[in-house]
Length: 449
Image 1 (tube, rainbow, N blue to C red):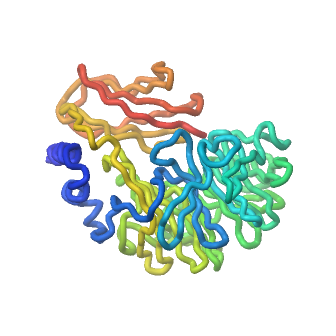
Image 2 (tube, rainbow, N blue to C red):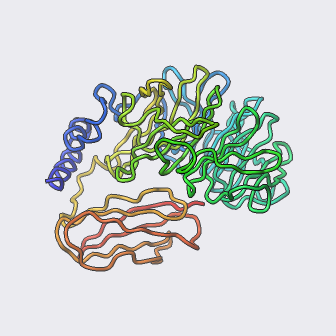
Image 3 (cartoon, rainbow, N blue to C red):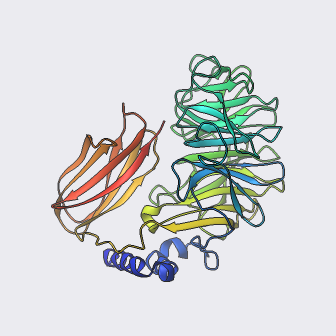
């Protein structure tokens, strides 16, 4: 039954995308909509004028309340820095490969705003800290393997700014401070600097009012605090510290005016992508849900890559919907009431990924995509078989060389997942291909560390 509903959805969308995207989404994916009252604010609707954006990766608030995000444009080679009006939701490009001069910004991670309003971005692809003029969009390297001395970046994950203007970069197992003028890099905390539980897989960070540094560690599924002078580390909240729902995949962290920590987290292991905003007591480590699919009303929280807090204490998240599931790329900025958890979208863009063209989908199997994507070490590739069939699932690099065969056997009808571990492989684009007889389907995924 599910297969025929999905097949009907694809057929309808391929012929009448503009007319039926809302209808078929409600009819064929009722679970996502019945769990929250989304009617009247469906994420497909574009809100705000200006260029579309997708895959938002970072979010920061400027002094005048405007939002700045790092995201992929609808069309474009590299990523762009967008400015978004907090009231109208209108969007404009601040800097990209056609706006502003300097080295291209390829994959922006976290953003911060300096005292003089300059925007600083962590470029995960270049392994560099880049300063962006907020007016012209011009880009200059602050620190990378050729600019500034000290230990070079190996796996930068997050960026924050201290009260004195110093920049702090967290990598997988080490925390570094970057001089904003010279680009010099020094280690604050790591396996040989500071005491306490080691960082294993750090991902995001924020600086507290007392200048202590809060770091998310995905492997530990924990929030950690690091002394900015000694580098000593302690657990603030994890499955054994503090009460409340445990973290599954924490992604972003921000600090409220009273010192409470706010973290975005994927809370539903078997409903991949459905996320929650969690508040953490900075002393006890206790965790409470601020907003998710059962707390607060409004559009669903899907994949939350970034988080910021406005002057009035409202929470703002950058939300992305998986095109592999919805046959569209959709992204939005969503404001969350910090008390009720109610959610309101104020800027959004969505566009189909090929729904204008009618495509014959093989009836014997279908790919459901890779998650997470982009990924840092391991990703899971899902697929569905409508009947027993010999299948092969293989991964290839950008040159077409076969990297690994994940599946090669006959399987009965059902839903499947195969895990791909990119140990020892370089960053870049990889392709996965599912074959059943003479028919194949191919997907793309990006590895970055």
